[in-house]
Image (cartoon, rainbow, N blue to C red; front, side):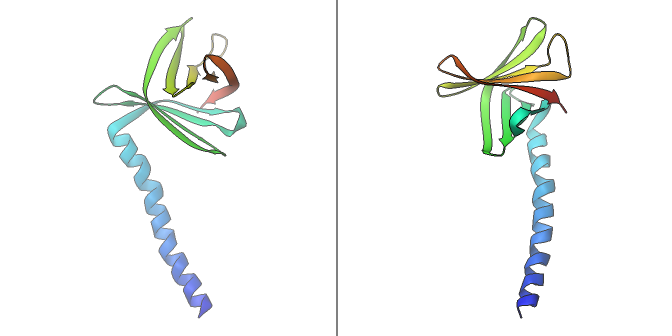
Length: 125
């Protein structure tokens, strides 16, 4: 009986997990396009998206401690490099799209009350 229940649960879970895996990226891609994807030290994976209709910049980060999703970002060119900035209360997240020395690398900086808390080097996907 236990074996039958385990097999039934597995047969039910497998299609659901496949369906969720393939349906989430499609729905996100239908409203916004990814403009930057990076992997950073410390396990941060950061994606910057731009909404097709409004042009709004969106920040999506995943790491071992959880996920963070922010909107209403800004973009500016600084010393020939794009920097994307997002705010969440007293915190600011800056994602540098490359460096002058290495266009395939970048940096994630986190500020709280205008003081830097963290800086991680990143690599574009």
